[in-house]
Image (tube, rainbow over all chains, first blue to last red; front, side, top):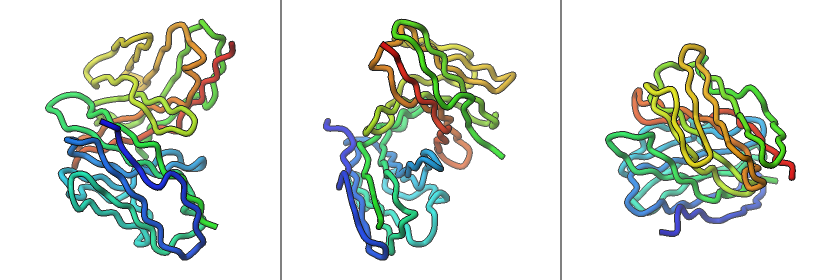
Length: 116
Length: 113
């Protein structure tokens, strides 16, 4: 498997524009996570899905952020409208549920978003 | 409040020496504690985990120690190599109300050749 795939790797946009980040989890994994990483706030969990269903979106900053998972192999994180403070690296991760174990998460390479 | 934090933001060690990275946590409800490594320009990578009912677990060149009395977690890296240079995060899994991983702030490890 190629691992978790994210696109684009880099995105530069202007304030007010819509941004869509994409993620393809590892085949067979049933959990998908979206994180945001900044120097100031570290690695923050935004939302996670189990079997394509959103379970916890308490980390989503505000209504400008939305995430979907239409099927087991694809998820999107959308920001509309984008603001300069949204500039960060956004990671997608996936994991496989087990009856025991810590549910190791496999992270993608991230999307570096810059909002001007 | 509940948090997972780190004692030392930066650690510099000589190649070949052992490294110890520390982490403090405040929530006793977590069932697993995990260490991740993040190299520059990459996503975090799982290193090792430990269940909350254990106090020690060993992997390849790494050992994780858990002291629940003082709510302290540490990662020991034996014979540190230049390739170990990275940011290390401790994290905890909380099963209450779902499955959620909370990451600490991270410690940057520099390995001097």
